[in-house]
Length: 170
Image (cartoon, rainbow, N blue to C red; front, side):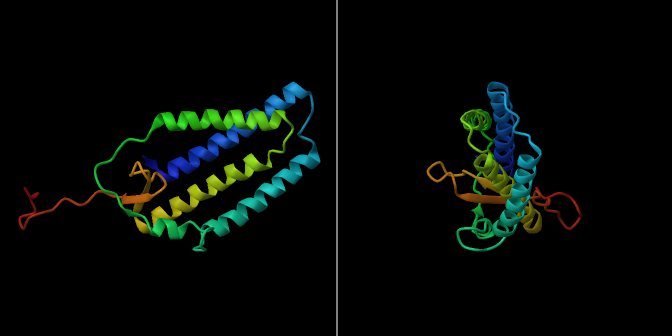
């Protein structure tokens, strides 16, 4: 179980780190310069356009595209807090770095890993905005048989119940 925003942002970070390592390996192994002026400009323009379009679509309530409907459908999380699975994050980072190195070495464009990384980045930002607006914290994986289901907890702890004499309730 892990916090939804953390999972999305760590996935984006791992993918973008994998792209950087993959490009570095491809440059070193193939002795070619992928950082030509035109290639960087085209990639940057594509990334910005994709980032803006994805942000607008993901923050909408459109079915199958927008994430807000999914966040609104989250159920209250039962039970106590469970710590996040740290091994999951390490495996994810290693997998993404290896995949990006492999695709860069074979000469594939970095557009597919870049699109995935930017998509996860936007989903994390949209979820953080939703959490801030609704005063809730989103969690993923509270049920082992349905790890994609979302649940939520309150963003702030419940206030302490007070008595008429302003003392804590027993």
